[in-house]
Length: 500
Ligand SMILES: [Fe+2]
Image (cartoon, rainbow, N blue to C red; front, side, top):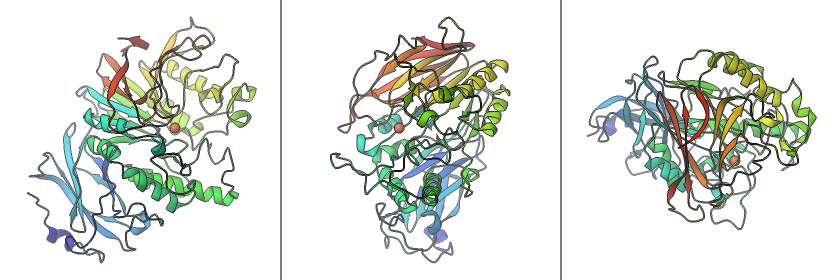
């Protein structure tokens, strides 16, 4: 059975280790893996026998604790291909980020942890194909916006059941708001502003068995959005001052939120906060099939034009406004110029295509509030002859499929890319079966809409990217069914949404 004996970990040399069964079960928040490479993957867990403890330390003592990790090609763990011991530090809320290296490319693995005499459940993960081979077809799911109070995380359960190769999470992994009395699944405590508060909020979310199942099913690629810190913040600026905080207090909150995000997600140690933010924009190659460009549209953006909200606003057109910041914008265009994979998948947070209301207002928090930034990016990928640019988006709690146009004011202008927008896991509640595209007359390039909760399943081959929009019948009660509410293809070399 296990080649790592209990003796090995007892001899780990850390004072807090106690004997088998003497401590409560520490793996109450599950396990996770993420950021796969051809030869490695990040393994994550947090020790928290009492995950809702108010001090954010999950019921753990002040000491550091040794955590063993194991990787095997079989679910029985009969033969380990990698193993070791990490230290879960008190200062990190007893979270661990192990980079399990020396793995074979394009291979499925099982992993688990052991600490304090307890064994975690096992997770399934995989490495990416070698950089210069096409590899096999890729099943990638993407999702965003899981508000614990807005319903059950059934969509996460259904994602796990798909047994995907990869899960992309585009932000709003937690919501920061105070508990609302009329909800069955209620946030603990007031709006979170402290490190202890964020840690406890992650603790509360990660007790959810459906979320744990989704993490255990596949490696994740994650990027945060606004609610992981605070609604609609931009760079270092808050849009509201609720709850009231001094400039120093807001800065401390911002820092705490990013720190807790890193602590609780399976990110590479290179993403660890430096005290001056985190480097979250990054690139992942799935062989020569697909390149993921993961963007951070929060940390480096200019403040919302005209005070945010839905506006007609000339300031939104100013050429000095950027949603990405100059360095990230350059990094993205340089990456697109590499033509490494058949598909360039740009994972990001906010609605990319133009979306005007009948009155001409647009969402100042989305790319419509940073129009020259969008123009530069679209022109940039056209100048670089990017064959298959596909923007993957979260944030707005409804599902969309959009043609991206070289000129949104001219419906006859060429389609130069495609956008797929996932709905939420729970935010907005049950939704409806509605599929009539809102404000279609003002936006003919918007091709599909759904008001169901759920996620998008993509099946990616060298000749097409198939997108199945998966809708959950309800989130107000547990265990609802999932069904496909729309299916489309993007064909190699032919940007735009093709109904199936
Ligand atoms: Fe959201």
